View 1 (tube, rainbow, N blue to C red):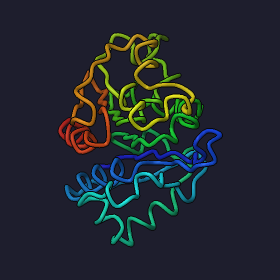
View 2: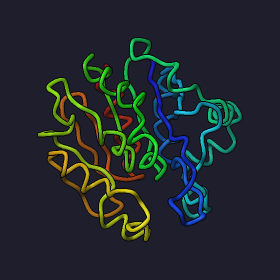
View 3: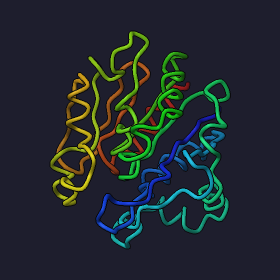
Length: 225
């Protein structure tokens, strides 16, 4: 089984002067969940090369067993430091695609035409497409085969407005994931802030927050079997 992971290349948190990127837990948990089951994983970013880690996800209080494993895993570090360029991968080489979050995707993956076309091709091939936390931002401009927004009429979740308020970035981000999913016609629902919550609708899997990353990966794996 081959799964493509798509990470952000964007590392600027608006005009705050702070850095962002991908959220380590949202990469590490699904990465090991699938890797330990023998899945072959390729990691790509819009720019290729080193994917930026969100410093907020690297603080001592944000560490989990999976992030600790990642930081000791030289092979995984190498993967993150040498990602494939997104324009060099194609849907036909993979069985599924998974997008970890972090705030970065709000800026680049939400409007990256290569990413948009890639998701549309995975969807057209009826292959699993998974997103967690802020990663549903990558669906903002994705269309279904009917030309409507892909999320229209689908059960979806993603980082909540109240969770964004809690991290005090409501006025920094270019848009709110919850609002965007609703505006695109998604049937949005959520659990309590920071609770594990993930939904499947057809081949689309979405998770609410970092705590939901393992559940999304598990649902993705089950869909492949």
